[in-house]
Image 1 (tube, helix red, strand yellow):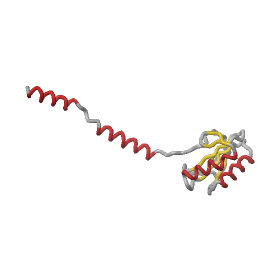
Image 2: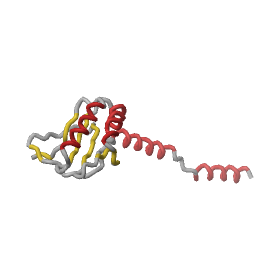
Image 3: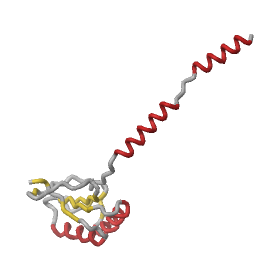
Image 4: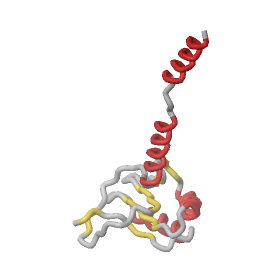
Amino acid sequence: MSDSIDSMLLEEEESQIDLTPMLDVVFIMLIFFIVTSTFVKEAGVDVSRPNADTAVVTESNSIQIGITAANQIFMDKRQVDKRAVRANVERGLAENPGAAVIIVADAESKTETLIEVMDQARLAGAESVSVAADEG
């Protein structure tokens, strides 16, 4: 009788699968992907940028503001008012101190809108404000 009980206990122990190593691997992979991913906040609007012979590629650590041909302003894939640009840039600089502000303006947008957005970004405390262009 005791042999049958021992064999039943032995069968139960053999039939269990230890999931701990698999969970360790899954958590390590999750941490790896979180650490290696980059978080880029784009303007969220497609624009036709003008060409420039002096255009250079900048780092991805930036706050992007998009201006469409209809002079609509976009930040973080949502439309914002001209008066809200300063607050949004201040929030972006608080999250990422020292970030550059890049304005992605459509070639058909008004210069007046571009200047107003640049002023609001500078008033928010941005040290580097630039306008995006395609390489000529």
